[in-house]
Length: 168
Image (cartoon, rainbow, N blue to C red; front, side, top):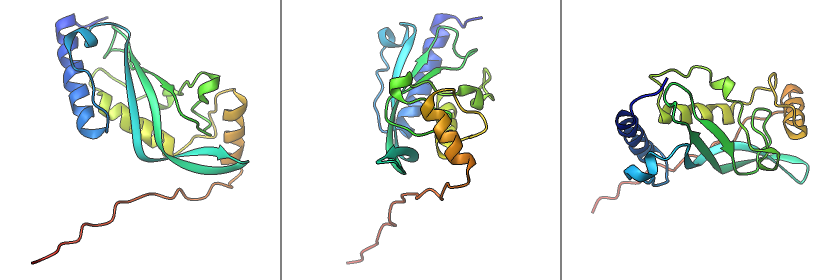
């Protein structure tokens, strides 16, 4: 099932515009870009802690890149997600393994879902790995073992300092 192209174009433009208010990236909202399927949208997540393995130690990265691949069947089908930056997560493959993201964990997708809520779901999954449902790659299996072992420490969250009010 598909939407008429004109309606799909309007919906995608509106959703990407909403995402541009939430994400640091600018999106090409021109009609030529939005009607060529599959539509590939590069996303940057900033200030979101995600585990990585560095020098045999789990640390956190706060800047991530991924790509949403939106098919002509959108919004009846959710986008495909390809991860582009290093990650140590049971539900997200390393880029060299394909970068696939286990979007079955984001199974609440429906016609009424939006790209911004989908991206927020990805952020939530990034912060809260599910060690009980890993991909079969070595890195995902290792991450699942790590999270299932109870070694996981609380994630350090970066917060912006409160603005200071200066009176003259």
